[in-house]
Length: 204
Length: 204
Image 1 (tube, rainbow over the protein chains, first blue to last red):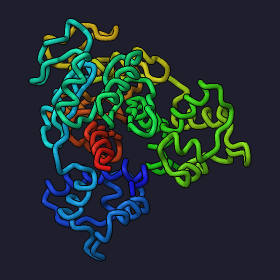
Image 2: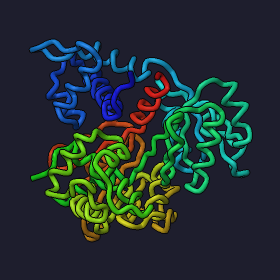
Image 3: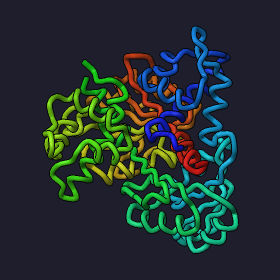
């Protein structure tokens, strides 16, 4: 049974915090501390972790290595995923460089664009191909995650094109809301949301 | 009294959904529908909106215009904020163009970098100045929100510099966790988190 959506959005937060705790040599963490680090309510954290089975050790808190492994495995963070980026402007280029600098869980395998100036250039070690070549690259290359960083006016067409070549899960960074229905997951990422949280803080 | 952190992270989501509903001509929305659009639990939504006072009309749901105005005002989204971007690489340039294309709530006023190649160039209509000029620009120009899109190794120094010139609230997109203590809010934005939510979906 799939986890509830709010839990899915919080598990990656916990994983990042556990990464940081592990790096600083901690071995256990209590739910209050982890909730505070992740910026979520302790009640939600305990509810989320309850979905993952019996993880806690009363008194000493959660075992960091074990909790990290459990969440990693649920999120699919213990394996490598191919990523295709569509739209190699400033944002797409920034993501390409980010992915090639982190290397661990997400591997940049394809870059697509339609701008003749960009085609056949190399960004972060990957050659930029025309959208026309998506089919061959994505169908033969196995499952991919998609990142859409095109201008807003072409984002929906690109999302549909990706879906037609078997890409089920996408992040859309174009400032337009895309919904392809239940068969495909499109996560619309909106940097404006983060700015709104900042302005709230400024109002206090 | 400040709202709880989880509520602060969800209010912008509701605002975006209400923007979309308003654009498509809706006048009222029930909590189930709004919760589903925002991807949060209906229980959380009702709890969040309860902090905002008595908003609901039983039966017909929430009045969209009124709810939008209330949330806008709480988030400070009904006024204009100055934004300074530090680090004008691919990511900083993408943000600069995004901000100048949206215009409404956040106005790009300053761009800073230290790369001689970038200084005095113009991006999205704003001249790139050296970090040395931050003080004069930010102190005289009134309160700013800060966006950090530098390489990770300089992000902390830039955050401290911004704080020293009175910038209280920042978004950090550099892949390094920054915490300046309680006097300054640094929101660390991690695109890897979104990829982790995608990979979970692929595992289903």
